[in-house]
Length: 376
Image (cartoon, rainbow, N blue to C red; front, side):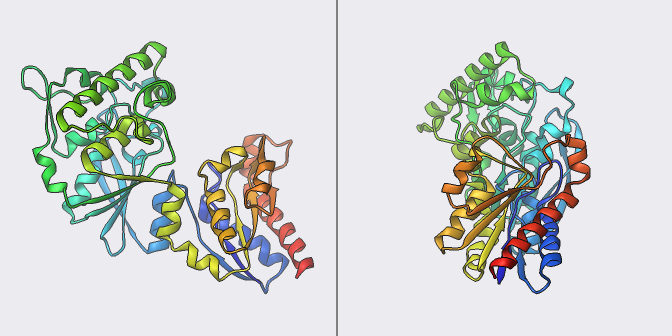
């Protein structure tokens, strides 16, 4: 039996690579003769760079940039496809992970550091970009990124504005002449967020609270983004603020679409294509996938569901092994999954779960493989 093991990470517990290796260990303990192929995956969130570096034999590039609050940090991105493609996670430069909760402030945070990474890769000759936008600490509609790329946002005195969302309301004119050098680049954005830029489902109302905003600030941020979007519509004669995904990363999706003609697409679909998973699936009998938590939300573009859809295209059996199962997971059994297993003891607290995660996962994989052996 040919088996493909293609999971995502178990968030805050095991990387995708650790998950697939642990499942393999459990399977081979049950049946050493199994023919196993392994591919670590991501849905475009954290871990995407590592997944693509491993799959494409890429390399990590380190570069000093500004974090969301303008402090110098060492960030990184990856080069793949013979150094022709850069893979950049927004969170490595301007993510919440770099800022303690008490210092988070989406009024003053900026995407400038993310733009510095893009510019660094461009100066190394890169023309193709894969960007992931999860985990941002910002709400500046991507203006900081554009400032790093040379765009000038000028106030009524023809002076450049400072960095941060609070200064967007001072913009009177936008000078995009420096963007001409980026006309030939191709940007793919792994983005499963469907929120528009503004409104009750927009960037500010949906995401700003976790970035440090209270209700008063959220309302003000939304108004600022709306005004900025109208200014862009007037200057560029096109409306993009209501496009799905423009609200991603505090409006960074808006800047990427409006100024850089980026293409937003499903994160897992993008990763599946980059690692050529379809050709691997064609040649196996069974697909094992999984991620940390599986429930009804798994159907909203998560890795396991993306793998299951692809496997069912070729009538392959699909088994998922999750860190835990939550409300509504049963619906997955009607949407591409033949069986789903939970490898976490119900009575465990998170620290115990984390400590025993590999042991629990290996044991679960072992038991699954034993069941399969009965059927072989």
